[in-house]
Image (cartoon, rainbow, N blue to C red; front, side):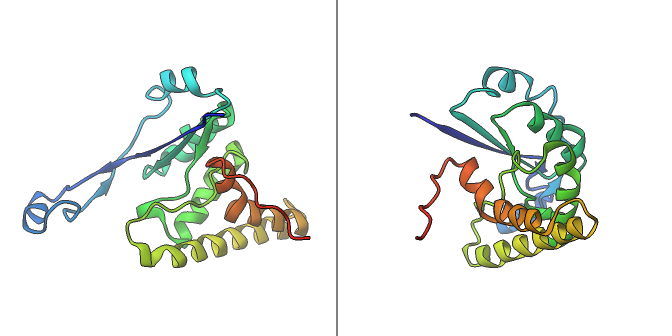
Length: 179
């Protein structure tokens, strides 16, 4: 079976400070988040491929306002759409918490891509994944404390968001269980 996974990274003005970009080269000119409009912009793509069983579209954005306004409802509507984790400027403990609170109410857990990493800063990968696991665990523990999840459900959510959702989003087969 042929499967296609497409990633889209949206919502950044690259090289905003042209003087710095000229002095130090590309990717050094002060990148800045900017607002995005997804509902109309993705309409044709999602109508054509949003329900295709062999397609996964993973969307990342730097426009935090779009999480609950556009992306979570779209991910809840189109089975091929997954929401990428907080990215770049929001790749922080507080940014991760805001993301989880903004998207899970409408998109749920299954419509998230978990935490993947396509950074060029290879030494940061382990620290970034550790931060994600800790942020997810803190959020899930609070949900359990508030009675939203049982303790067991909180553990399952943490495992899914730290491991299972990324494997599912990229169609990586599950490893056989140790017996």
